[in-house]
Length: 511
Image (cartoon, rainbow, N blue to C red; front, side, top):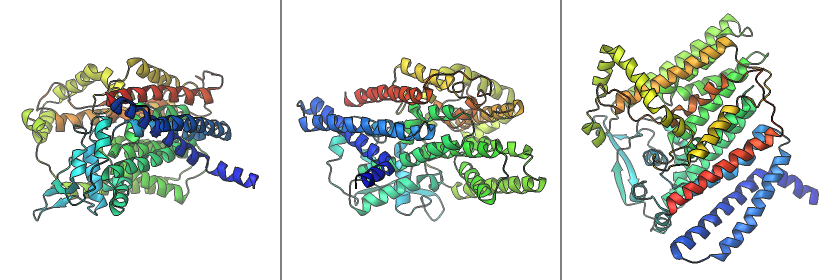
């Protein structure tokens, strides 16, 4: 019986770690908020902190030993308590544009694969319960307000039509969140809990995707590991956001493609199908990330594939991407929301901006250079994690610098048996550059006044998908720096840094 219990625990150890971590963080939340807002010590939660804190630490130690030095297993062990802490202490709807994605996910939960349209095909929005309007970050900005809104009467009949800015995004990236809203609505539970359930679903997918990425990528495992622990990546991962699943998908695509490049066996039918599916998902995400699909072109020079196989594989891949882009464009051509106050006041005109670019290519190139020169520090910091939230949660620069230090050295602490060739490295840098240019150009067109000197609205989080590709270019065979016990020191260091960030989140939302 004892041996049977041990086997059961071994198979469910990650689940127990997640449960203990959740209860531990929840007890901290309850104990501190009651002391701050109600002025008394809730000793029951203090006991919970002690008991479940100890259980969390013990399960982390157990899973660390059970991982037997495999980095992908250590990723799961340490990302669970870190991610759960972000989930509890980062208020819902506080990831950038999260409320718009919540509305889109809720509409999908009601069966609206595309947003509802009138007879002329123009979008008329989603039917959203009032509570999800009240939960916008402008209203729900303190723990006290969260506690209050969770006590509100459940009312799914009080609805309003809302045209969400996320209406043009493909529904497939909202499926987990939509399932969460469908569950809570069916059980007649507050839609706020639906937000948290959606966050849990997205976080589980992030964990599985991160595990697969670290395990599958042939080199640069510490690069991926470090990227997955960045505060900005975690903020997006535990949110109901298009970026949550998109970032995970792109990371998986990078790892899977490189695993095909750096191996001796030929591609089998299953691998080709997986490659096409991942390519299709990137094509359905955001047009600015299409250059990342170019990573697969390295396979054109793969001697393991015949000329016929290369033509078929990349012909089919190109056809899938083009077909999906055309279909998506046709389906969403009428889905235009009313111009925002910002767009009107700043004379933003996408059509006129495109014409300006075509007529003034030199000014356009100068704009690209000036945009990067002016905002490079902000892009780097906000890619790592400061500021968080709606760019209003400052994180101490010392922590950001330490994350940057680990990110930089992540390319050198692994003894790689393979690496990019010089030509592959140049090609990947071209992919990164093309993606950066598309990101800046996209915001220049849709968020900047015609003829502006720099592109407005660009945030560091937009560069997260190409961050691994950039760092992988610096990962070589002969630049290994040996660090004793690095496999254990690395996750511990990243975990501790993230807990300092969570502490700053806590003080931001409680005061």
